[in-house]
Length: 116
Picture 1 (cartoon, rainbow, N blue to C red):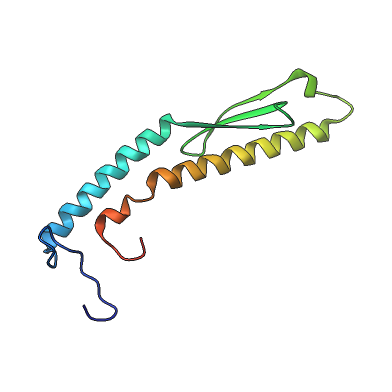
Picture 2 (cartoon, rainbow, N blue to C red; picture 1 turned 135 degrees about the horizontal axis):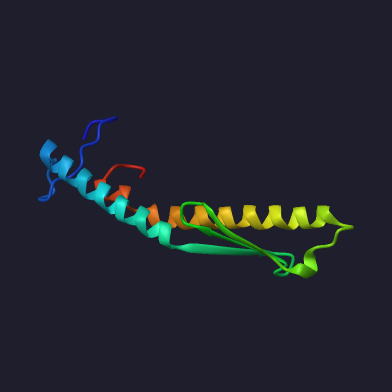
């Protein structure tokens, strides 16, 4: 193989033909679609302040719910509640991003591309 060029392997170990590469690409696209649909159904949860604020997000990093313990609501200290909500939302989004990365990793590897 010459430097700077890469050719995916065909089913018999040789250089893949353009039609084989397109077939592989179509398979990976289908797998990615299935994985994306599954991510929409998966949820992550993050709690801040010992469970005072709980945020649930899906695998697409959309916030589905925020639950606030009434004991965390102090009219004299609104900034603490704001901080708890911020921490919980960011934590849930980070966990959702990790979930998506976990589920999607390896799919592009099916193409046999280097560094993927």
